[in-house]
Image 1 (tube, one colour):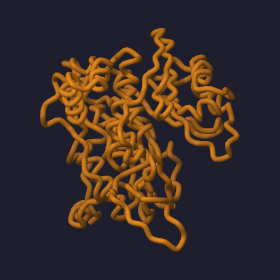
Image 2: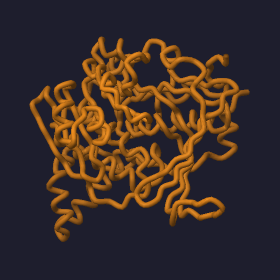
Image 3: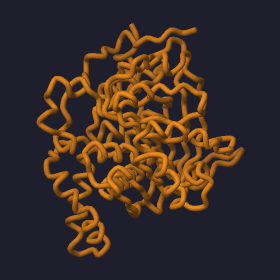
Image 4: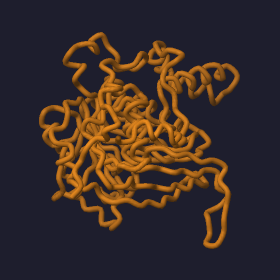
Length: 390
């Protein structure tokens, strides 16, 4: 069996995790410089990593024996990286546990996540002679199709993680009841667990999967998953059923927005999505989830959390790729300025500006050089060589 290691050419301490939240983040406080906070993550997550190659603007689905041309193409980290980058862009001090291949894709992905996005990879590992999982995503007509090749990491996830780092929040995927639950010890120690659930390829939707919600703070399924697992016939009935299991229940409804119940505060909320032209929906749910974590840790009202998360998703889907399309505070400030400027002479913009008025106070401290989204382009060969094992 291959043994885990970090590439010799990558120095983990070269770009350390920021000890304070970036200017403009709603989590930035005077206590950020304290020794305790400096050693604490806001969010820790684990999952499968993919190297995504995304084609956008396809005139039609490809058919056997034909060739079609795409208007756009991007290459970027995918899978669990979508959520990790989205969280880091929004100012969350983020840690990620994932397996990396020792090929060029894996080397470039490691350097990008650690050096550019400042994600703590101390619980991640590069596996010798293990290639990166690759996904080709075809974005067309507002949706996407994917082709993936990869293999499970050579060691159990819990073994790779070891003792999870101290973190205020965790993102976890609910799995079958007999599977390992790496996050349970952290939940017992007070970390807030924000749970999601993957698509069930068997479509049996075993309700026992939801049993671990008893240890979670929040659950964020989409409406199809929520109705399937609760055996209900509407997103609203599914939400009501989930609200009996977990303090914060959120059901996303795609273009129809999101609904939620926070039993810890007694709040309910329903918000619409923003009208935008979608280029690629990859990672939209991950960006939404990152926004919910930000708003929850900052103590925002439930409706503001949903609106903010819907905005982050809307900004992301207007660009291709999941992780690198996720917005930073600079993108959010730019959007808010454009809406405010358009509001006096545009009825729709005025309605949106009224709905998002809470952003006034939040973005007032965002500097002009704040983090913004990055280009989704595979690095130069010289870049890969810089971080390759020696």
